[in-house]
Image (cartoon, rainbow, N blue to C red):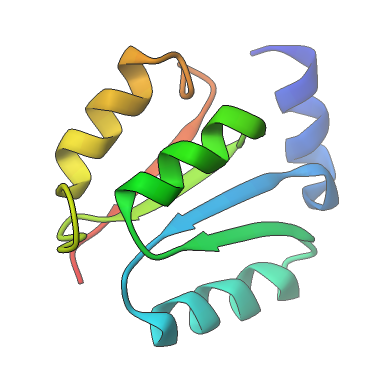
Length: 99
């Protein structure tokens, strides 16, 4: 495990989280829950396109993605593209939500 990830896991306030979900209610529930854990850097986007754009500008330790992001591509194909482009690696936590 790399030093940056180990440090972030010791102090949740250092984690960067990306939520890719087309339902804003889910955004709010997840964001509030993560903030209660002490995570401060949380980005929420509504579709795969904007998720990819966020990953081009920032590294995320945790990516949670709805399996059925309906507006452009499904969560499975998005996560494959994120891996292919090097935006996620073995130390990235990926959470697929089946909402």
